Structure formats: C-alpha cells, structure tokens
Length: 109
Length: 113
Image 1 (cartoon, one colour):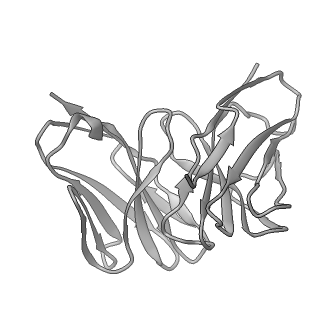
Image 2 (tube, rainbow over the protein chains, first blue to last red):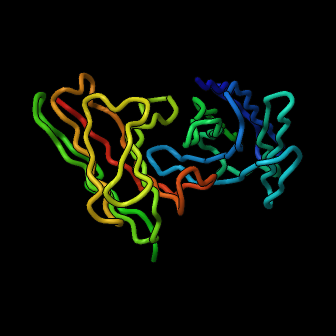
C-alpha cells in the first residue's frame, strides 16, 4: 500500500516563509503533486514534481527527493489568503494519486 | 467557462435512503473521480473512470455506486448500505487517468439524519 505523512498544522506570520513537508511510502513512484484547499472549497492544483529538484511557480515552490521519499512545498511572502489546507498526493504503482492527510496553514497578521 | 459542476452543494437525507450526487464536466476529460473527505482529513478515492462506459472501485467503494454513460457525466449514488455517509464529496477530472493535475468541483456536503 501507500502511506503519506504531513504535519497537521503550521502557523506563520504575513510576509514570512513556510515549508510544508511530505514523506511517503509507496511501491514504485511516478510523481508528487500539491493542492491547496480553502475551507469548504475545491482543492486546486499548485505544483508537480516528477523528478528530483525544485519547481518554482511564483511565490510557491515544490521540492522532491526520491531517494529520501520526501518532498516539501515552500510558500514565500505569505499572505492572509494563503491560510488553507495543503495536501500532497503521490502516485505509486497504482493508477491514481493518493492524497496525504493535509496540513492546515494559519497565517497571522 | 470550462469546469466541473457538482450539485447540489448541500444535501440532507434520511437514514436508509439512497441519494445521487451529480457531477458534470465540460473540459473534455476522459478520466473522472469521486473522493470522500471527512473533517480534518485527506481525500479518499471512492470510484474512478478512465473512459466512458468503464469505471473501477477505489479504496472505499463499499456502499457506493456510479455510472459513466456519457463522457461529461459521472453521478455517484450513496446507497443505504453505506454505514457512515455523512461527508463532503468531491468530484474531479483529468485529461487522462493518473494525470498529476486534477480539476475539482466545489463539492457536495451530504448530511444523513
């Protein structure tokens, strides 16, 4: 089977940088995606890593180390609107991505 | 505008009744998915469909059924056999099965009383 671990909660202040980690155990590996979900809303895709290294998209970056079965999402210049839950999702040998339990980010003024 | 539409947004049903949740997409995607989300938890896959007239069980399919008669539509029925149906249900689609980017609907919050 597959299992993913994320911190349950992270708190930071506006303007700061925060890192949300994701560790996984899978049979095979085909990629790691990140999603943002505001309370009661739809998850929206943020980033994808298929190979080791850093992917940058504006204020958000995502990193993957396949040898460590580890990835992280980096959010820079935090804004109040970034308060949300963040999910990593991994695809192993199965046909579909499996989602982690999510990390709730609270951005304080 | 292209997207995924789920309806209704809120649904209340009595225990023992079957209920069908609607999901329609106009993104021309082949793959569609249904997820269940419980408070403070991640998304768990109920059913998925790679193509019209085909669907497969996900991790928690017991007590649920689906159909995929049209490319655009993937309705989910929550049957009376589902022991704990109260949850937030999310429908998603992607161009192909296993695509790293899925597009989600706004969800249906089902409450069974």
